[in-house]
Length: 405
Image 1 (cartoon, rainbow, N blue to C red):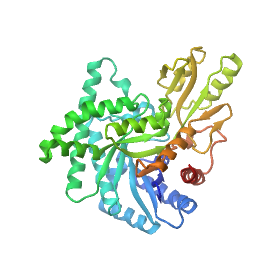
Image 2: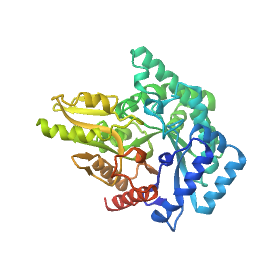
Image 3: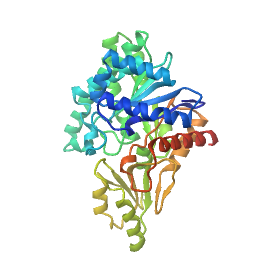
């Protein structure tokens, strides 16, 4: 839905399915129910997630036209998509495979270009569109040496530039402005602001400027502007909170380099101080154990008293190190509901969301906002509600916070 501070929706990656018929059935079931509770009297924007198989099926003209007719009938529109997960995202072990295929693979390029062509066909006239994507690759797949990491980065960057060329050609040909929104996350090849900016200024622009100059016959300044328009940041609040990065600092660094935020993904992580007292510490650790489920990666980043960070690739590894007295705080990559600030002895990074929304209200830095709590199926008992009610509660909470911040 359109708000005074940008378009707001939720990401439909919370709904299972890999085929278009499954995706469409979920949309028909939940979107009207959510719209009725959130935006009954205005158009409702959709943050569409399509698995690779579904994207292939939606390119068929009869499927695309049927979807467009349904959107018109329900007074809905698509303005953003999630192109990070390629395959199954529910009822299967996802873990690090959420990055596969990564940006070194041709399948990732083809899938992303296909999504953009679908988005161009679905976008309302005059509206920009964005698709969030993986932070190049998974760091543990290419961390054996610096040379290997550099090779992965170079290959992934060159592949991403193939997408940029297509987006620029679409826009120059009279089509919509669309941007690829790169989403840093813990243990991604790009996982924080410094790594994102370092890649952008040290790899993407140096490789991209001559590439775009040659392909589109533009000068150096225009080539740089094209890249900055078509490659933007997906600011996932949970991910940056896990890195202990203050929202003001993230946005200020981006401004210094003239880099844009294509999408704000509104999500919350779990956090807690780890008491020195053994009994109190055990209560906190046992609370984290309730969130140790086998589907998704739940990276943990601990902080020591001196501010140094300790990284664990998943919650089981953190639990093995639970008695480490040097670690004073844990933050875990588990997308918990936005509207709750505490879970008994655990807390959420909700204050980061409140602050980000306050900054968006003061000086909007993106046109796209998307709630992304995708863990409803794996939440501990007692935290689950009916899906439409849960999603509506989150969106109405965001509307209230941004209006009052």
